[in-house]
Image 1 (tube, helix red, strand yellow):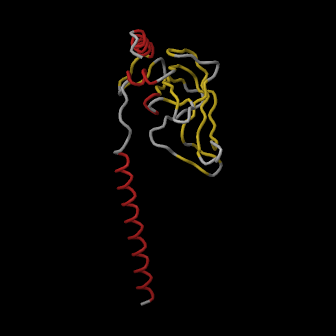
Image 2 (image 1 turned 120 degrees about the vertical axis):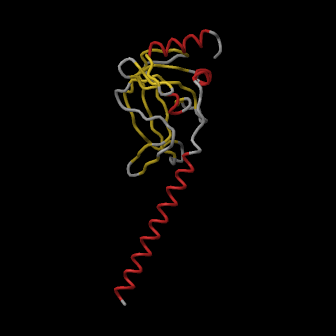
Image 3 (image 1 turned 90 degrees about the vertical axis):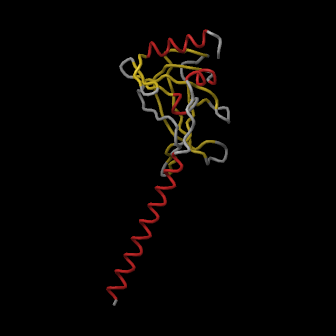
Length: 173
């Protein structure tokens, strides 16, 4: 009977674990359907105070604010071209989330960056007045071999930037 009781306890623990796992996956999948709305290129252009092409030169995460409870990642960009607005020799973007020591925070839909990466970025201010990527991941277009992807289609960066410049020149921003 001792063996039967041990087997029964093991079975119940496994059943609870599997039930909990199924519930977590179900809740996660429901949350993923609440993803952010698509932002049109015209909206990104209009909402951004700055649009740049640049290279990522530094990335580091830290605790932000006076209470030091918010984890953010600071991404330093060396702009090579400014399509809208103005920028100095560097641009520091504040992205929610990151890893500080043994604490981490992942925020869905935020753009991911890599040192050395080249990207076209739509920049605006967050609710605290810090520069960030407008539309989060939708406002970052990685550049590779002179091209980027827009709505799943590969386009030349030259054609993409010409379209943005044309939109800006029509005075619609």
